[in-house]
Length: 299
Image (tube, rainbow, N blue to C red; front, top):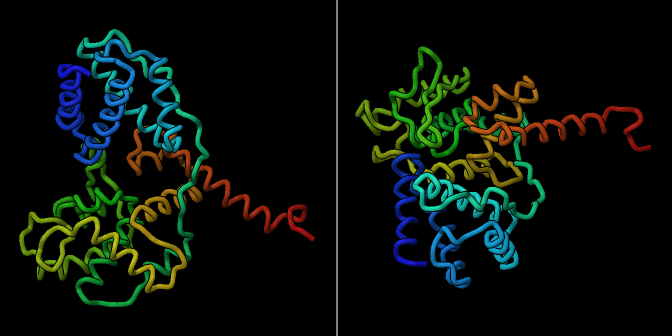
């Protein structure tokens, strides 16, 4: 690739951070995939983006898969390429988007793991009334009550929580804001945390969840605390913060059957992302059928 061609990758990175307001982590993932594409183009003697066509990208995807990249990873790689080519098309660097008709190899759909209601109840019912236990209980209850992503939880400021209105304002992917309800158990746990939070962070404008030194609690700390609480409560699997979000969506869909409503609460841009939980719901119903129906039970 020529230096001018490679410079467009840097401009695309600025576009992702500035216009699309993606996180640095997501932007770096995009740029890593495009660096792989640029390196592959060099092996094919392709020195300008306008010379790249759909057949080239099919070969790029096939070589990526043959080199050990899983189908889902190839999908992410092609998604980055399509976004990049769409940007180049807007900037009139290319005449079309060759990635539109290129598909990655199909992968087996992996359903997210969840905790059932009893397991979630056991996890949240851990003992302790010291400040850190009160804090852990508050953020774990909020994760389950409102289905937050880990980054969303860590990004909460004190002013984002409206105790009187029983809501929390969350900034999700792409800087999009949504207002979520907070359940009564979570609200009770949050009130308990707010009563002791001032001993760590007296500043009203600080993060909602802080550590001993008053700084915002880090994602890795939350991951470690959740895993520790699960071990202490005797749960037989690795528990991580996103498991609360999966369980929230699955339990809500089981009881409400409102796919669009769950989509809004989760902040999914595409309802297809939410539809994975309908498969979890079907598995739940299938288990009930196998256990209950006279013609399903084994003799």
